[in-house]
Image (cartoon, rainbow, N blue to C red; front, side, top):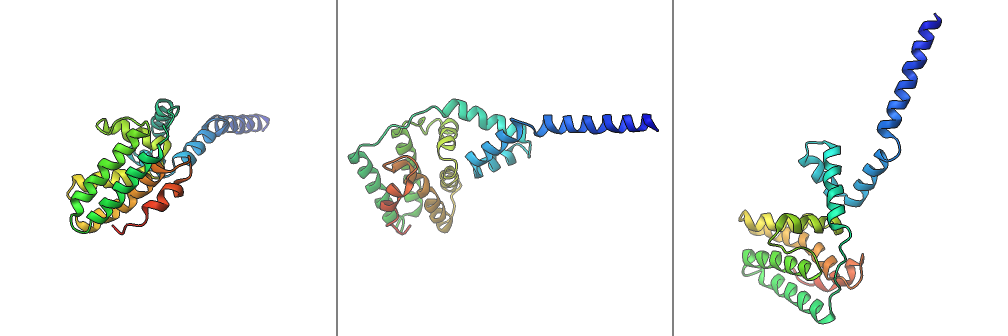
Length: 192
């Protein structure tokens, strides 16, 4: 009987140690931290890696290393106004030429991102990865706009994509960091 008790204690001890190593400091904290930081982007990357959290976290961690230290360049008031004016114009253009307006919106968001210091839109993967580090809750709208334009989506899908991409545009044109409403409030006027 005492040998069974000793074996049981050893099994419980090993289980506790294994649980600590798997869920202990660093693992759960990092996962929770990345999930909070990236939000829907975390879920998208996790799905792309077939639920493999380690692979998803490695990818997101690499993105943070590559693009996290990037400092966004401020916009001059004139440049900001030029971008807002162009966005308002393309929203008005959407009624007559939805596909052309959506394509212009994609180019405009890319140009604005590059103006703020992000990689050029021509390097699509690097460009979107950098945006995902700094704007993880809005970058999917930009992706949706890109695929809607590329796939020849219908008018309603283009409209929805344009509205979703407006969130990223608002954050990029904002006058202060983490204050998307400062830029977005002037962008919302169009109907698209």
